[in-house]
Structure formats: C-alpha cells, structure tokens
Image (cartoon, rainbow, N blue to C red):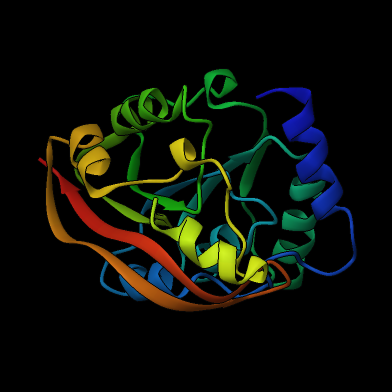
Length: 207
C-alpha cells in the first residue's frame, strides 16, 4: 500500500474514539455464532473490533492492517476485553502466514486497491484449510448511489474498489456459498458507517 493510504488510516485511527465503534460487525457476529472456534484471520482489521470479539469467544486470532495507529487501538481494546490477539502491521505480502493455517477468515470491509484485490483474495484462499469458512461483508458497486445521498454512510468512492457478485464468484470459485447476497442495510458502526448502504455479504466453505 502507498504512503498516502497509510497516512490516511493512521490519521483516522489516531483519535481517542474508535472510528467504527468497539462492537463487532453484526454479520460477522451472526456467522461466528454458527462455527466451532479455531484459528481465524482478519485482514485489514483496523482498530480490532472484530478480531477482539472473536478472541472473546475463544478463537485464536491473527490480524493485520497497514495502520500502526490501528494496531495500537486494537491492543488497547484487547486489553480492555482481557484477551490477546496476534496483530501485525504491513501488507499481506509481508505477512508470514502458512498454507492451510486458518479455520476461518473474516473479510469485513476489507477494501483493497482494485489492482490487487483479486490477487489478495487468492492468497488468502491459500491460507484457509479445506472445509474452512470465509465470512465477508463489504460495500457493493451500487453503494456509490447511497454515498451520493448520505456521505456519513462511508465507504470507498472508487467504483473499482467496490464489489460485485460476479467478482466474488470469480475470486472464490472453489467454495460452497451458504449465503451470497447483495442487500441494502442500515449501518450504525461508530463515526464513519451510519445510514443506509448497499453491501455484499457471503458465508462460504472451501471445497
């Protein structure tokens, strides 16, 4: 990731308040409740709300993000909740994860740059064991219509960074989708996700 992106996220996460709140994403919470605990990876975990929540359930949590300020907040939140998480700072390419290391991956608003997002998805797939589960929620390409009406709902303004159902099916061909939908939801996540938006959600098991 370029320095501009790192600076942007460090600035957002440097305030005392949690940018997207301290509570986990609702869809992640719902889907984790269906799984046996194991080892889970959270790419682009920001201030750690989702990774810390998983740790409170007994998951062994690995996470990474490009923001050192995000890591600081994540460790703060983990301490508050009396759990530990392995949170690294850097790009996916600099991580030392291994093939088949994880039982689940939580991709929650992990909007990687368009030029690398499909490659990142394929790399992440290699880290998930056969039978493992991906839990995904992120903004769809239709979301730009919602942002134009309400900037407080947040999300990228770059169409190519947003997702379509076709892209998801292409990036994850070796999965059984238990759910794959594009829907309108009402977001209430901290300071930067508030209002109606369009998201893609899926829960899928690796074949």
